[in-house]
Picture 1 (cartoon, rainbow, N blue to C red):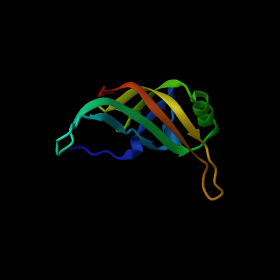
Picture 2: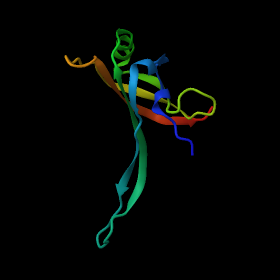
Picture 3: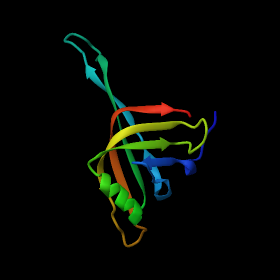
Length: 129
């Protein structure tokens, strides 16, 4: 089993490498279920439904990054996410997503940070190029 350090994560949003501005990426996937229990049963039963995913990034704000993310708010774009970093044989997720939120808050006691959230549309493609 080969574990990897998070320092090498690569994220591309709309053909822009946002890795130098990003220090957290989340890619949770989920599957819907529909209950099929009927009267008289003692345990619930289910059938599988649709799968879905979201993607979010957080990091240190920069005016260049601000222009890239603000321009895609509310639009569908491509995201490339490489949890192992760039390299031959490393897992790569490629998917279309809609940017649903962008937040560049400031705080007197900290560096200016940002967060952005996306909802994945369609099937994420997993490859190991």
